Length: 300
Image (cartoon, rainbow, N blue to C red; front, side, top):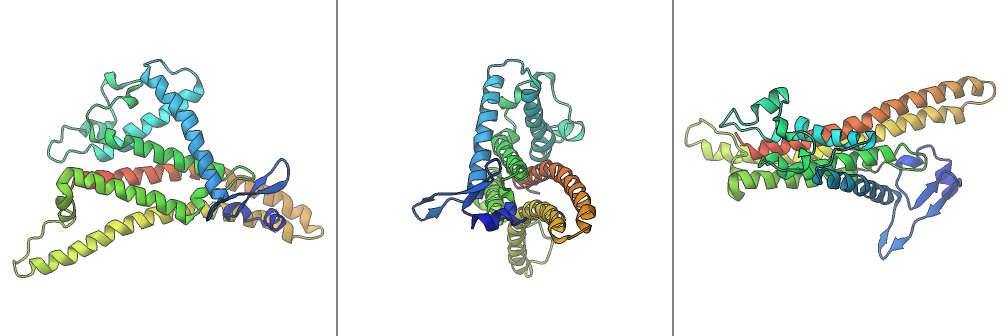
């Protein structure tokens, strides 16, 4: 099994029960815990979670202590956290349809009071977005780290599995329902899914029931598409790289000297593009999750 995986160009996008060690050049079988077989995607998800704890917990302690963050490493992660707060969460969640003054300046120009400068990401100011920021921060970095781990030799992109992305989308759906229930109540959330209809009273019950079914289906479909989008984008990049590198094995004779440099350069170019896509897909997933939460919290 290990040899077949090592010679398979698509082995890094397929989940299996061995973990490849590039330095040693072999694959280590993963243990089974009761009826559960530990797979490579599980290991990558665990590594992503450990990285998040190792980076974000010390950063949170620095911010909570109101110390000026020093060093490019900590400044980079703090900038990402502030961007998610100011560029994603607040414009999409803190939208007050009854009072245009609340959150209007943030959504339009991104200007915030000076008192909310450095270190304010850990200090809630009563905004609705602050309640969902921990979820959005966790979502972004988990998706990002899983994407980046798939680019390491011997690693695997857990986000290239539909079961992983479906779980993330399901958690987002739960957050959306929680936001809607908090805003409108358990019954009001589902009632508000249907827009106001100016129709004759005889037709209204039938049309309302039909629209309710359509809106609930749309709510579920949005989150299904959310999971499929991330899964397809991450899987496609790995497949393209594998196919390009596969040309080297297919070439023979003198063609090898022509195909190999072109395939390597093509794989490097696609890898650089995939690095950009890793950040982009984490942003898109988090942005859409925040947008769905904001729509549920502010029904029309």
